[in-house]
Length: 142
Image 1: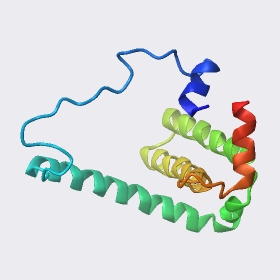
Image 2 (image 1 turned 90 degrees about the vertical axis):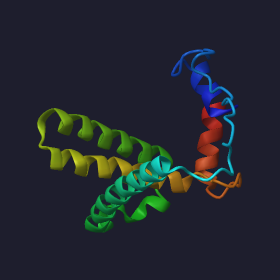
Image 3 (image 1 turned 45 degrees about the vertical axis):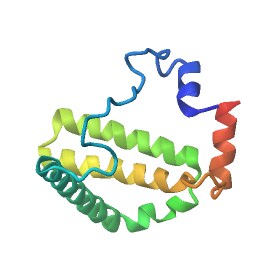
C-alpha cells in the first residue's frame, strides 16, 4: 500500500480531492524540462540554495555539538527515533511560543537533524537496506 493511501485509510489524510491532487502542468511554448532557466528563476534558485546552506550549517553545528548523544542513530530503533523526532517538534512549538528567534532556529535545526536521520534510514533505491525499518514499515501497512 502506498503511504498516501495508507494515511487516507487511517484518516490521517482526508480522502482524495480533485482540487488537492497534482495536475498535469499545461505546457508553455518554449518551456519544458530541457529549457534553460530564466534570470528570475536563477535568482530564485540561488536564494533557495543560500537558505538551504544556512540551515545545513546550523544542523551541522548542532550534530557536532551533540555527537555523543546522537551518534547511534544508524542503529537506533526506528520507533524510538520517531518518538524523539516528535519530542523535538514539540520543543520547536514551545520555542516558537516562548523563546527568542535564535532559539527557534536552533530547534528547527534539531528537527531537521532528526528528519535527516530518518531520511537516511529509508532506502531510496527500493532496496531493503535497513531491514529493521522495512519490517516496521510493513507492520504499519498491514
